[in-house]
Image 1 (tube, rainbow, N blue to C red):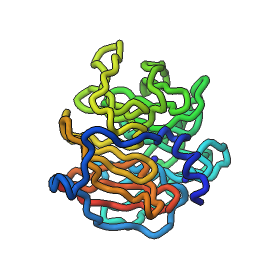
Image 2: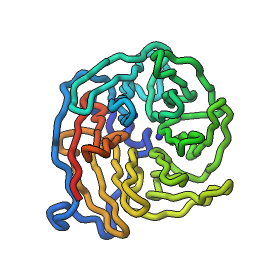
Image 3: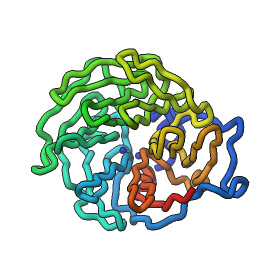
Length: 289
């Protein structure tokens, strides 16, 4: 499952990004192990930059925009394409019939994008929206992920996770994930960030959830480095490094009022791509750990 600061408190709840730190959370200064170093940052060319997705085949980054009014159908959404050095290749690569696009996933030459109560399917080659899948009873669709065969997307306000096939058929696989937002798949296994923490779901049709980290509650974006190492963002300005039972704050931009929305990752460069939402920027940080 990718927004003036007077909206920050409301948007934090809106996006399922509330939560508090507790337990064994540490800072990089205390642990001296994982950290993020700023590599580049764009100017304020974007509008409500919400989600970043890296395409390894094309070596580009997709950014979803238009989330200053994250639940309104105002037709001001657009998808940008960036290079991995921080330059903007096409600011408005796809626009029109997009309102508040958030999470994205690539599968078989198509870019799947959540847009409030529908999933938009963009044909990458033609840069055109070829199909809209309305989602019945959807309230606030948020993140999107794929396991390489099918897709998953979250509804933050409804606390649901959906599974969808490439022909557009969808079904609810979890309805007990409060404030669910960030989704990712690793080795065929679905992971999610919700109000209870980081969850892993059983690799069967039951999708039984298991909380594997209860410190990063209300998370937004999720990167999976391996089955015990994760990077997770919390919308209001925090990024966490989770390794086994240890949780470390590796970025805190709350004082600058710079959001950390749905993060992406460029593995070859170890770059964490951070859409700053209300700051209308995209930043990249090199991860060392």
